[in-house]
Length: 265
Ligand SMILES: C[S@@+](CC[C@H](N)C(=O)[O-])C[C@H]1O[C@@H](n2cnc3c(N)ncnc32)[C@H](O)[C@@H]1O
Image (cartoon, rainbow, N blue to C red):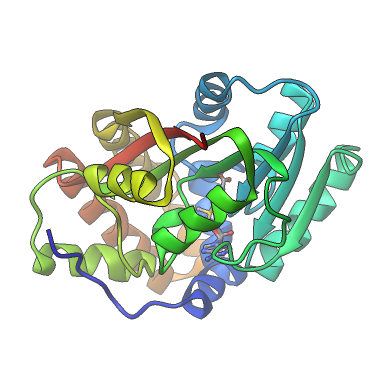
């Protein structure tokens, strides 16, 4: 299947997360900005067999909430990479407040060019963010390079899970500033292409659709007055449209989320 792309760049992503979009996402999804919150983080952590002392690179670490969760619950050292200054600033402040700065370091940068030496990382980690990355093969190649032999990659992401036309994808991408999404099969093919052994791939679209039911309810009912008051009518309309179209596409099993585990031989 030919991949449909839009011309969104890292600058568009930074504009979202430096602006009110980041605050809105946190208000709707929680400090761990991915569907399923801390429970989803535990699922991935257990599948990856995190052990105290391991070094985990969280690619697109945002507010650092998953990093703090992993450091405090599993005793791992986390190196978070993110491209957006506002997210990094908040991540650093909240990590200091949680007294976890001896376990977590943050790096500003694009995850397509990692600031880590080759063969230096035990686990590469990502949660629902690589959909913003313009070249996912390059990202996976970098992940492979930095992992120690035998090291694992584990990530979740928003993906294409069914038949969907360009006309249907365009408003979904526009609502999120996504350059493109990988498909369930596409991610596995890319993982294999760069050298990973694929250990597990799970299509979580049904759960994703249920999460979107909740986000729809929150945006259009429970949080509507607050969003209107704090963010204004334009951002409210934008958010209402976003949750409406994503919820519909998820229930149609056209888009959803996937979980992938791989290993560097
Ligand atoms: C949905 S949030 C990530 C959520 C986070 N993984 C979590 O679970 O809490 C998206 C984040 O990805 C970052 N991001 C997107 N594309 C990036 C890239 N190419 N390099 C580095 N960071 C990127 C954004 O700055 C933003 O903070």
